[in-house]
Image (tube, rainbow, N blue to C red; front, side):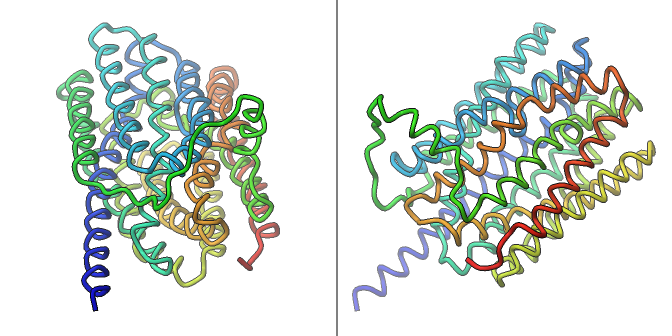
Length: 405
């Protein structure tokens, strides 16, 4: 009989964890959405060229050099030191990054954005720990739906931040906008420290003899055999995105004169579609359709980039952002559920870290290359390379990913 109250207590703790993690996801999404909308126009406003945007993205952006270096180790540490401790550290790095961006705006000094993006890249260490916390707060058959609920909070925040961030940057200026999201990040740290409960059952020593360090580093980057085709597709997709899609807002601001408000509308359209599609996609992932969802997402992504080559109209780019939001909703819960089925529980965060970081080993120079290609050859060349990479990734996913666990 005593087991029943314990079971109810654990269930209540799990619900509380998911709710608080959703609050943290909301704040992180506010920060990320505002960054994606205003950072690239901000760099141009400071007088820096598009190639400098590429440099910043290569350092601390999506699959940049710094996240690539820290993410695999972050997952390994989260499996030993605990998920919560790593997540708190990640939020502190994020807050420091935003403070440097504020100083860059005050001083009108674009060079300060390099260390700011380094710190922002280090804040990515929270990704594997977050994924593990979400997965471990629910039963295995609810992973896709739980991740969908978690992502829903991020999507809701993204809608608000995309519209509000662009408007704030135009009406209030960049400096107050950076200060506002820095304050939110500090509040998120407090939520993590005083609210979220650790889910790691057994902690292990994080010490490694120096002679074994090279072997550990290589091991953290090489995926297990069951996941290697998936990694191949993600590496190619990541490099392709870095050359083109990662710099899209900068391209559009420089080439077509899109304003922060227009970029905010585009990002909001993406977030609304992501928000509406997220929970149904999570349900489908829990029904065993993870492989099909990932393939559908990649094919739709290919169509979107092809449209970018054919238009200069703002409303068409908004429509493609709606489709891109559906891509994100299909991909994320399916990927987490598919990988979760193929790794041991004690290596879960390590695998999520490898999945987030290892592709960047090959892809981190891509945004800098994309910026140079844009300056020398124009908009079409980096976007066409993005499209080519997606076609190759499509082929790998369709023919290379196994159906069985």
